[in-house]
Amino acid sequence: MSVAKWIDKALQMGVKEGMKDTPHKPREAVITDDAKAWVVHLACSKPKDLGYAAELWTRSALARHVRKQAVQAGYPALAKAAKATVQRILAAQTLQPHKVKYYLERRDPLFEQKMRDVLLVYQEVAMQNEALNSKAVSPLEVITVSVDEKPGVQAIGATSPDLAPVAGKHPTVARDPEYKRFGTWSILARWICMTGMSRRGWKNGTEARSSSVAEGSGCLLSSRLHHSHHPRQSLAHTSRETRAYLATRPNRFKYVHTPTHGSWLNIVETLFGKMARTFLRHIRVQSRQELPQRILKGVAEINEEPVVHR
Image (tube, rainbow, N blue to C red; front, side, top):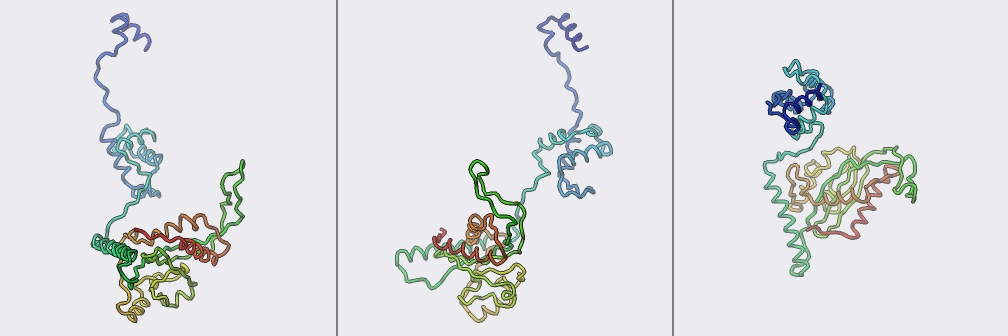
């Protein structure tokens, strides 16, 4: 029929004119803007709120729900909508409901003020170091340290030995995916801002639970390792043990706190980052006790070439 139609048209109008499309009114879109808006609304809702078990949509699940509810919602044109159709509707709005992107709210009303306080501390350190380098002042009586915790470092052991790289076979270290979990440790580190040196030590869980957080070195939170079962409230500088210790050392310590969700302002985080990129990367141990020993060795290696951050 189509061939006969075009032949008749060419005979009536001539070949050149017959090959052209005659003006006609565009066909009304089958899927209306209202129907597309309904699909977008569904995509911006969570499937769990519509009675499903899933937290987020997959494209197939969303398309299936659209087909199931289309007629009842008043959009029969979507009753046979394929996954590709739903995807085109979402792509036009740049929506990706199957993905998660994390964000962080600023909940601390004093964030700006606290951030300035921290940055002023680093500025004072820089000025003190410049004065020392020029030998314009005597050795410092005030030491600035950055203290923080890296919790939950896993002590994981291999079930089979790693295989070294072999040219022509496997260019990387080969490792059995199975592992043994011996437990976790938390690292408390003290970063000396003037020198870039870190201080560390460790106590086992039993001692840490019954002892003060104050260390004999004179720094309240001298860097140490403790077992992750250690109660968190006795680690912070607001614990009863800490307050009791501070009461015996008036005017000895001054705390400058990072704002809520502003731990990135704490320069000791650079030490934790370096640990994660170097000796903690892909680490495997043979016992729970080996992990703190390896960490102490790794920190000692970092201290061989300390970096003063500016």
